[in-house]
Image (tube, rainbow, N blue to C red; front, side):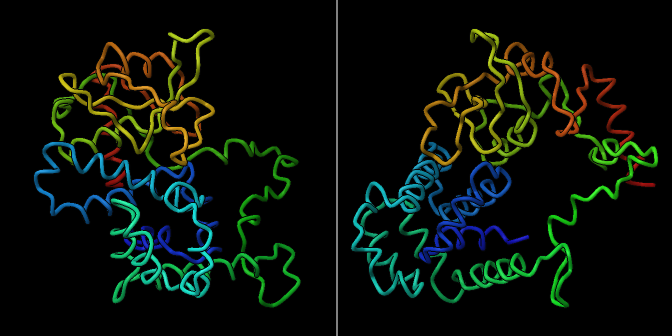
Length: 303
């Protein structure tokens, strides 16, 4: 698992092969996007006032837009001549970003210069990427060579266990304690608190859950974003609903819809929607059920 700073350096690398790979790896990958966003937020944390007036939130949003332009060579990065530079071809990311990104973007350029420069830089991330690519090439489920490694495909075998009366579908079910969603506004929830801690806690509680938007005809199955919230003046934080066709690459954020974090709106929608089994979620409808879940989780940990 890469460190959040390594992930940020990884997506800022100028190497064309890594740029293409990074585009694929971060699309729809909520946990990684949160790590990248948290790292960017820390790098911008010198702006104390920005934490209070929402400026940093706006800068992070702009970072994602500018990163998308960088990866797609659009917007300020639409000049192909920049990418013919020897710095780009030879992977000198910090030098390249100092020439181009820093001078043509507001957030991405300075961040990219910072994360790809020595002594930290993107070297570790790029080396890890190269090692992983080599591993992918060596993965051979049929083990034809002595260099073959256990690959991702090997994890999908079922050994024909169903022939022996084994319910293989049961074996596929998630292990470990279930995620418990408490269907009420908990004491810690304060939608007017614009702090990072509150924002993160909202994403942890609601992110990834699904609900049916009954205002649409026919109803549309929405997913609560794991990376985005919207702060609306006088009403506070709102969860962002992702429609089924949402790409998540920053090109279609306008399709996201805000939903009030309240028992009458978001919680009611989630409570009345059956959550997919893959999410391993149990809905606690009242505080007594919530306490029972906490006790059972503690018992499983202690045992």
